[in-house]
Image 1 (cartoon, rainbow over the protein chains, first blue to last red):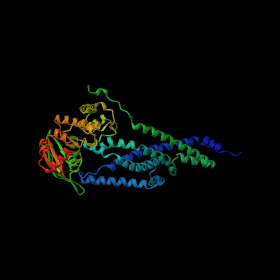
Image 2: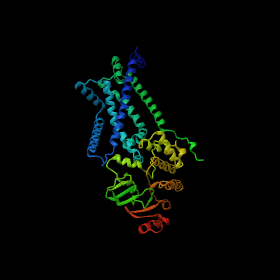
Image 3: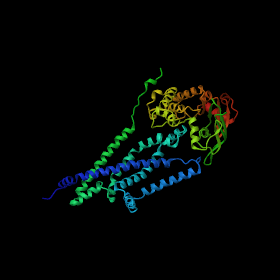
Image 4: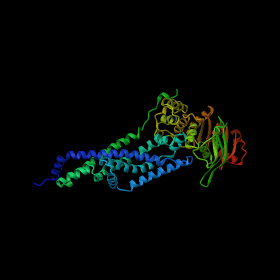
Length: 246
Length: 244
């Protein structure tokens, strides 16, 4: 008797269930690690690129600042201007041919983090310029340095505003890890291809994977909205009655 | 020795010269009000005193020491000169208490306990201590401005600069902010206040400056400037204000 769609799905899950699970974990690990590290890179870029170059600084310091900015924008141009799949190939095989053997996992994380960093750098820059100039002036007038201003006043506000954007970035990465199968990392897509090849059941295998991706994205979306609500803070505040006069 | 001295300061934005060769000095315990029409350069002059604006030419001295050279030097100066803005500029990610503690902790490197007690003391002074847990967005304009004054006071400044502190407030709550500033004047704090509140300027200042088109047109004791001004422009400006 001809097997139905569900029969195939059950067979695939029975035989390849642990592989799907393992692939899901690898997908999660690479995307979480790559995204978080990428955020750090992105925020650092944002801070560096928003540092004012003061005419009071020495010529050497100014030249250095310009050079660092040049490097930053070069990095952003390269990583936003080329496909992630190509970056993965160039990095992974480039290093191999140069005699440096890194694991596909490390290569995958590095590619994701560099990509995320480049995109986030622009978002952070936008986030910083969206902060009211009065916040900077208030801090400046107190004698806060640029870094103190950034860390205690500006970035906490930028971070809150960028939560939806960071969520986008994470979900994109979750799905984009699939293109990294080209360097042989055993993530979800890679595992699915292997499972599908065994029985030539591509539709069923990828249907399973599609559902897994959907679930992962849905869970991430919900976690992010919880975080967003938490960051909104309380609507009310408590008066401190001990400080009322009389 | 003047606390702040401004020497031959000019400032241009593009081709527009906002300040023209200004000389000005401020002695300890003086309360100077700067009046004049919008665009006369009052705020720009005030902002040159803590280098929020860099003068196009001329120099600014703090206790006879020329300011500038490095960002670090400028930051050190700003830590000793407080400023209160028209638009409050409270940090929106911090509560009232955190706003008032931020400067003493992050700039003056005081301990948390010390910063807290200074903050509470100054918040009491402006009558905002019960609101320590509120965020700026939860306060009215007058409350925000009083917190901003407490925040500036918490740096224990030698001079306090006010840039139109009541211009963003409705007439009913202007009074509560002015009362706080008057009290500070009584306590002997050195202040420079840019304001459009003529009655307040007359009452609180020890010297009043009238600015017109980028120059100091007249500088005199308030009882002279407001009743018997020398400069025809001062007369014209005041008559319009008194009539209105």
